[in-house]
Length: 130
Image 1 (cartoon, rainbow, N blue to C red):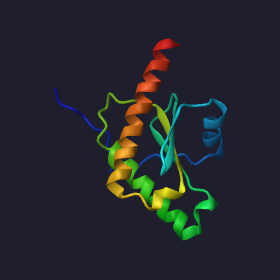
Image 2: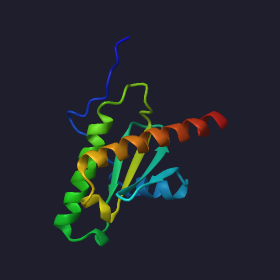
Image 3: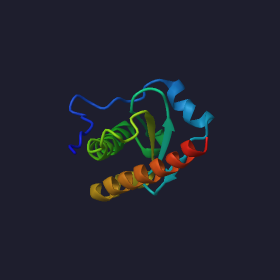
Image 4: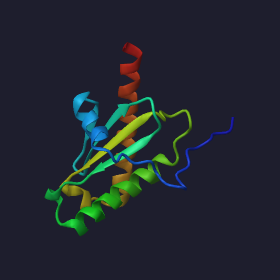
């Protein structure tokens, strides 16, 4: 059985609209917290998309952009290897924390991978119930 993978060669679909970010707050989507970031998943009827929040508390524009690029690249690397059977109709939100800049990149990728696995299991349980 050949495994097909999602391709991000053209680019990741990212959340841009305020209403997409506010939807996470309204439906109390499940989340996972670690020192570097908070990861929240929301099942939707559309395609897989990512949102990245880095607040002004993290520093100036240069620092915020560096943190955003860091978490975005970790997500891209982890999610490009997902099999097609993985949930493609999710919006995934990453909220940066201060430790994001100091965590080694390999550790960051491991946390993103663990977060996805944990949240996918939580979401499977929720969809089976309801």
